[in-house]
Length: 343
Image (cartoon, rainbow, N blue to C red; front, side, top):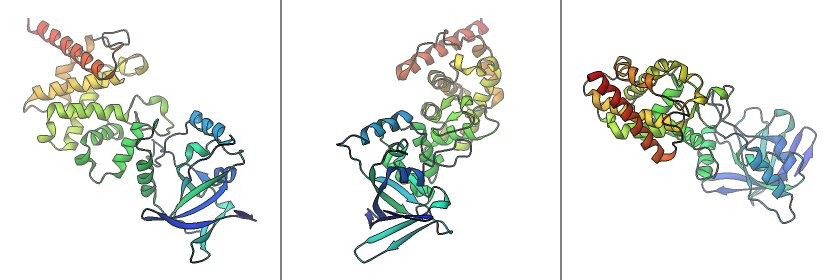
């Protein structure tokens, strides 16, 4: 590794990582920290793909790497294609020897594909670390590699992995209809869930987030299995149906929908149990249109009388067994209301 005025030179060699050519070398942690960045998912713009920095995780690695017996596998980066020659690779011979030259005045050039938490707190720790750097990968290719490396990683947000799957899918409606519909809820402006599902990235409207993408898509998957509605309707039509269901609930339960921290409507147990009720209503509808008018007529009296707070009948339920029990409570409450109306 060497440094000249206005540039950094890292000496190494070229090799292969499976089918991709990579540069292998060594550099100090502070230098790598200064020259690299994590492309964290911005939930508002849908750009990026990394998770937010976990400070505790990063601090743990900082403590470890300073120990006398410490070591680590190579940190993985990518150099994205640029037209301004901010980085250049010089091959110095047939034996694979190469030099990577990085301009100091062009910002952070190295994208952190798999090293965000190892580098996150090393800005002043003078250790030398091994690096493996891909060349000219697109953002999509970076995401694919990140997803493969981290799909089983402990602590990686499941909603972020779901978002990756959605971005990488060729036909999401066919491959994962439950995820397609969950993202419709989050992305369509007239949905009450518009930009309110947690995707696992960063956002300027974090306090407005009500539930995770994973919670919603799992609830919708159960709804699809319960109704088999995709045998009769396109996925986007079913998505509109689900949006209408939640739109009716958000209007009928306007007061409860607002302070969602004190109510169970948007917690895991509430989302899953209510999607079970949605499944019941769709199955009962037969050939009737499952639109706002239909859902309003079936939900108005029942949901208004139910106590949705943490102190109500659903308080304390959690997990799969808790969802089943909560759904049964809602079904009983709905049935009692129907019996009173008939009598």
